[in-house]
Amino acid sequence: MSIAGRLTRQQFGSSMPVDAPAYPRPPYAYRDAELVVFQYLTDADAAAAVLPAPLCLTDEPTVELTFARYPWSTLGPYNEVIVSLLCTYGGQPYKHSVVLYVDSDTALISGRELAGFPKKLARIDVRPGAAYACSLERPAGVGLCRAVFQPAGPVPLTLPTTRQLTSLRVFADPEREGGFSLAELVQTDWIIESGEAFAGTGSFSFTGVSALDPLHLLPVRKPLYGILMRCNMTVAGTGRILERL
Image (cartoon, rainbow, N blue to C red; front, side):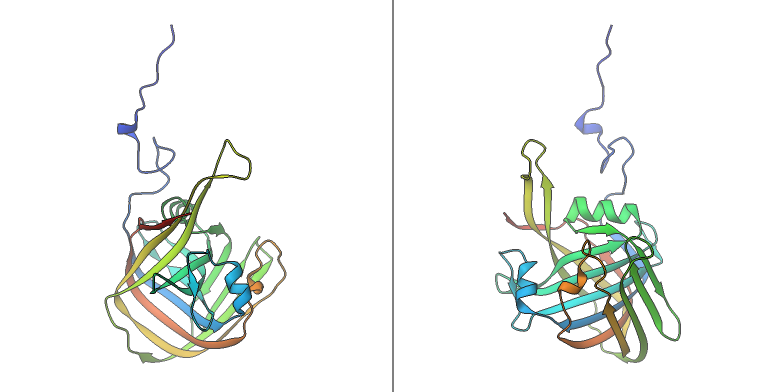
């Protein structure tokens, strides 16, 4: 005699596997986060090639490169590298997530499934000291990016402040090769609740050694600034669908 399964939708956990979820429900809290942020001008054609059609570049195509160290969060401790483009949607400013790297499977899965953040696993080092030494490798031993930043004087930081990010959330169609079951532009809010910011001296470089992770294809035309943020923040985890593509 066969026995029918008893696991129903009403019993599902917050994520797959539904009987042992890979990550908790949002929102997600971060404490004592450290973010080394660089902005630079890039090539307009290169930037437009990786920006979804509903979005528009700013007048001066600008990339933001962030090395982040999260010693405590409700997703656990991890490091992250974020490459984003300044853009607009409906006349409102956003930062579009081109690619993100993390060193935690929980952060990887939750970011991809909930908000569509294009995350990959990598080896990331963010070492505080007299100067912050940062590096990104994928796979381990293949350097993609290096950075150094020495903080100096504090700069004003309006708090709380919300960073509005967009991401392209896609899921492949299991019935159509090369097709998508889902493709949508999602907004997610990162709310910085408290903290401080410091200007300083720093530099970064892309190695250009990997065709699998071609960060160098957003070339540095002109560095703009570097800044260190030490903060507490909340990431919404779930966002708003701006447009279905």
